Image (cartoon, rainbow, N blue to C red; front, side):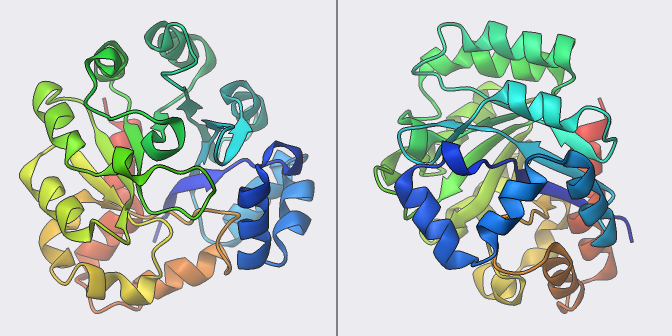
Length: 275
């Protein structure tokens, strides 16, 4: 079975905030061993992913220096060059970029970026603020997905109010052709809201990154009923296990074969590769 990992990170030790660095070190004792080596050698990361059974992986930057980390989009673009398995996304901060919509268009049309990551609780904005609508309009026009961090975080300075998924209801209605992905599916607070919104709107998807596979059916008992809307992501390198362990965990769930296939590959493939 082919697998698309919809949620991996390029992280660099020197660009992490202290609270982010301490959390990741506690979660995974091998964390710095991984990032120090892999951040310098994308070919090593690509080889690792293939060995874990991954066909493609989205690589995310993170423009949130106040709370988590600052890895510019340009770094991710350079990192993914020459590695067909790696798919670069952009990260823009609406509070600091003077014209994020124009910047996104440049990243996509000139640099091969395939999606956008926004972090409301780290960057301090509500997703339905009108000032973001030009950015969404560009993403919709270019047919790229927008991934929102929707879920809890222990990083110092995080403001949880901004990533309540209810604010995506407005965005989904006002941009019916914009593919919206809720990263972490409301982890901790909003599992039911995320599940409901992804069932309600044809353009909203759930990314189960950061959720232990063994607990997925506790969080989402009717996951089979939402098979067209769920995406797999590992959160590499932050997770404590290997990517393959997460894949195997999903394969072991009592779900329909078609649900697992859609979750691990087909849904992400449609979002990333079909216009």
